Length: 80
Image 1 (cartoon, rainbow, N blue to C red):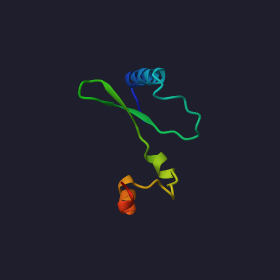
Image 2: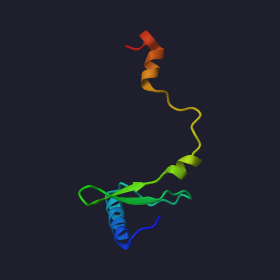
Image 3: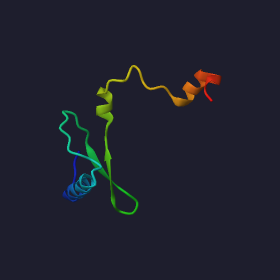
Image 4: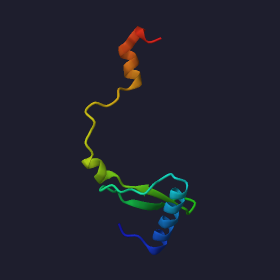
């Protein structure tokens, strides 16, 4: 994606702040997703990540964890 120098500078600052607060960490994965900046109504930037391509190659879990409400319905009166 194309980005202006001002957006690149803002992205760097946001990334450094997220690293400092340990909300993100460096990744050594062979997979990645592009991060973009979207302007908020107050003029500041919001970082968003486009996971569409990564989600398309993700292998679905054949044995997902059951939904709590469904489990309670199956258990019926055995759940108190």
